[in-house]
Length: 320
Image (cartoon, rainbow, N blue to C red; front, side, top):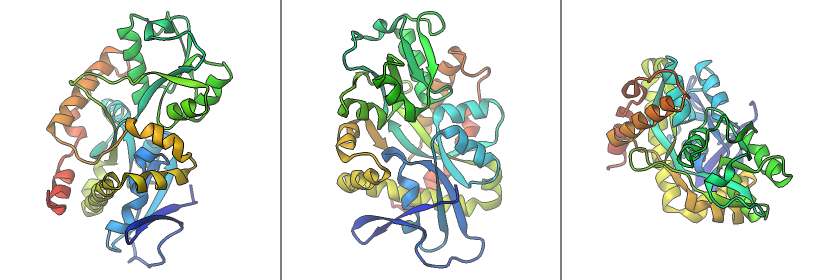
């Protein structure tokens, strides 16, 4: 976690550099932000461009949202990524997390072996499915099974497999299917061992919400200005990347994912930053479904989980 990759945007091109920008910030102005090294969670690597030398940003890459949240609660991060499902789970347990802006939408896919006889979700009966518990993909998988009339405890074999290992497990026949976020579904397609069975999303009551950026109540209380500046930078970075999709994908390919894989995945990825009352309502609907599915034991205070004041200020900052 001590190794840092900070991505700077120079003039009109996006260039990846290691280390920092060589400018010495004032004492106490370092910000630590956690995220995944994927195309849909790339924005923190661009924050420094928009902070006007106010903060030096240390971006720490993680492989799962649970570790990011743990580091945030331990005080090692100022802000980090989280799936909405994980944030709702944390809030249901009384953990002091606060969602301050969006991160990404969509990005999930249910994948089966290319030569499989599985052609619809009901064909998954008796099959072994890889998943990561407690994630947005877990919620979606349970929903897919429910709609197909399958009991996740009796009709299928759910197997815990890390996202990075799902492709190998599928290609070697260790599992029959997996539900994961990009780029792993598209990687399975491009490499010829998998095919997309479904892009599982809820109806309009929940939509395609996926991940947000979170901080803690203490961080907001003690350094609200820092969190606001990070959200402002996040919003501007998101808008820049959305307006220049070629540069976005080229930059994302430097995480190690082949550009041709990203070209397949791009239709299933959506960068985000804004939050509104409709988003919060969708999160409430998701929390209800999670409780019905047995993923949480009690409903969280969703209104307290989301603080919309940061995106409202970011809109003003961007003239929106």
